[in-house]
Image (cartoon, rainbow, N blue to C red; front, top):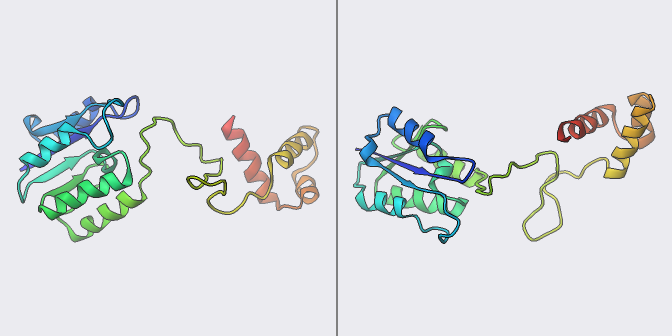
Length: 189
């Protein structure tokens, strides 16, 4: 039997479109469990998921719009996926197009859950700013070639009509780096 699960995130993932997608995927509307967005309830307290897990039997398949709908955090998603696997309840994600009935799908669920950026804040992440490790000031990835002052200086020189090769030479970076940095800066504005 196919069971559906939808979890709302305020402003980002409303329930209605998720329920529509689950119904279109063949899930009986009477077998769709959901949890509305509610910041006042403690993390992990989801009556809809609890009811689904209580009802589900080995061989049933839980259908979700996306893996991120299983929980707010990677550990929460992994816990639910592991519970389902341990109870031989299948998992099918419409967005990612995976199904744990397939061995490759079972592996992909684990990888996606560990790599997914599960952020229920509803605020889009800005990819042009370096991310930092939690609790530290160091950034993830390669350091930027130009600091904020150098970028501002490059923009001023460019506004005065100085050529990109000349600016790049003066700042000690490649033309490609300068073009990319200026383009990132324009896209943020």
